[in-house]
Length: 91
Figure 1: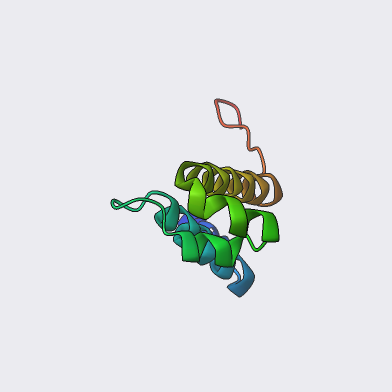
Figure 2: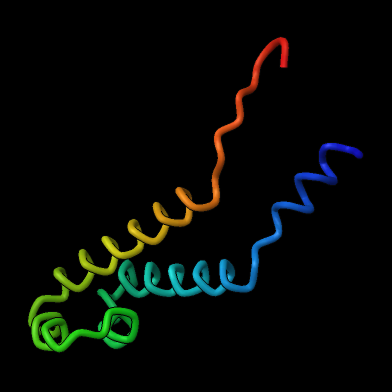
């Protein structure tokens, strides 16, 4: 079987992976919005009574916490989805 066919077959995300990716993108976009963090969107993704009090007074904290969550999700997906492959001569 052709190598590209194998790669494309295995590269398709599951619906769960797509859902996680979409949510992560939305959270990232809310954090880095040009007019400042979109607090309502961030609070939808990070529901917590403490955040509901702090974020409106400190949008920078909302941005930083949202970006921390984005990093956590991306790292988790990489750890769970990527496998090392050795490339080089003789393989």
